[in-house]
Length: 282
Length: 247
Image (tube, rainbow over the protein chains, first blue to last red):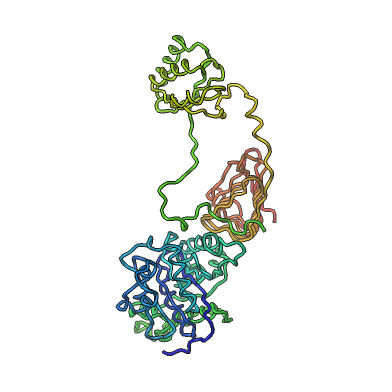
């Protein structure tokens, strides 16, 4: 897929994808959001902050191409250009993988800032995939952010953790510590939403979540089989053929870049009577 | 707008792992007031009797010597003798209070520190100057214009606290005066934290984990009978927390 790179000076926006709780879809969302941004022609880089676990490169399907990583760059063992991996599907997309052999203490505030500043001079969007938790790694991922996408599942503990993260975003980040700076623009992305279970009263509704978090809604990604399939083959879901989840991510990214898109909660198409009778998986 | 974003006190992100940490520490010590200028045989006999009666009470407890009634013991030789005799009885003497005019060098050689006279549990005698400290502090109210998130703690040490926004479960509000929440209260709210029983809590809907006024608290389990919706006024009457839906 070839996209026309934008010729204007780079926007240099840093977006952190965070959640507090693990397993809610941060890495999947990071992959999908960065790929969708790149598809729209924005020069985009996605950074894996989950030092020691390294999942993003697998989701992006480039784990065999990793030579140098984020930590090498921070420690001056490699140049940024050597560590950046250009995506083979969308040429405006790059990946900065992380180290699997180091731990999160290898991230220093100065090192992260230096790398981000270098990236800002070349990219429109710098997507930071935060590790779970609220410890050092997550704080490093969010510290220099301009915008935050807080990924939440419609489930109480996930929502509470997201609330905690929103508190940190508004108190322990560079924008919060700089007097007079505009606060981080935080938006919530609800993932693994299942309309059927909401209808049965088994799952929190979008309104319930928003009532607690009190931040704007970026999008609602339905629970979808396409997600796991795309992850397993190493393709961001938005590049893996049409699906309800891909559509939801595309919409969310349009909103992220400032386009007004009507909020629609698309469910996976329910199997018809015929399909149900013959038990064919969709 | 004051204090737009409340910050937690330390910033774990900024420092590399520090080798030490300085923290405030209060400890409870026994004060041994010597009421005789002549700390001789009868004094030690009485002391031994006391130690024999309640050995648990003294074991391991730090002890401060109070010389308010025995200024004569401030004399270096007599103080040394007293301290040595006490330490022989395994009393952990570490400080001296109300010992005006004692030479700091003498204390140093005895391994003692001069302790400022604090509040003793049974107040022996009103020592004038201690009273002047409690000048009324100026009232400082606090207004927060953003939602209070889970894990945040907002303290209005010397006045009222007003939150314009919601208070999430897991968040904590503490005020010396009243607390007003213009939004749902799902966290904890403690008004009158210095013991002001006339403090009140107001919120737009009450789903709190805990509400407390002047130390009297109720948790969500005992809040059950109170309707969660509607503006609620919480106040103290006859040492009981009362809750009223006012709108």
